Length: 206
Image (cartoon, rainbow, N blue to C red; front, top):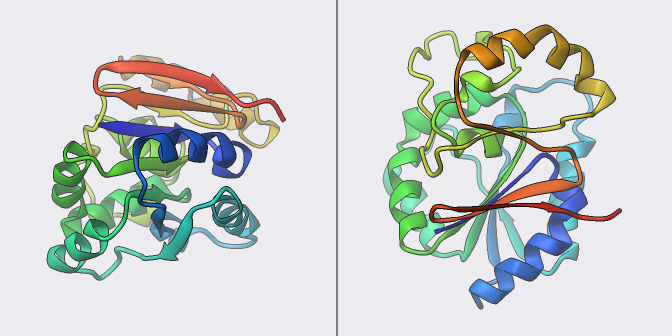
């Protein structure tokens, strides 16, 4: 099992690609922008992530899991060597994950060798529980189970040190500590590489 969990893919795509291509000859990557569907305003960060994956050498295609069925998801994921679950609202993303059956499909395929890459919300999703997210849960009012994909026992906290998230971190820090989850804080130039039970924080120089 190999996971590459980042705050922002556009800053680390080249280094992630270098490692991924050592693991698989299949350069097809499925880009999953589902979490961004709940975001309003400028989404240049989403397009930047996708563009940098293309520049890094991936053969990128897009696929939202919203409204999809388990069989269609399994077919799509079976065709590629890796996926990138993009950023956005983590609660909306998990809601669509559970509704579509994506969680059951991706767990099985990652264990068989599918490489999972996450950006922000996509990285939080890979952990045991998304309650560490700073996002607004109102985007998924009927979601009551916040259990993540459980691909790792570590919860990634993205965008550490970012001015945009600084105030929100300050306001939420007591709540985050009270959750008593194993958390890794990542800035936008870092990613967490998880191989089975082995972890490494990688910093990419800008």
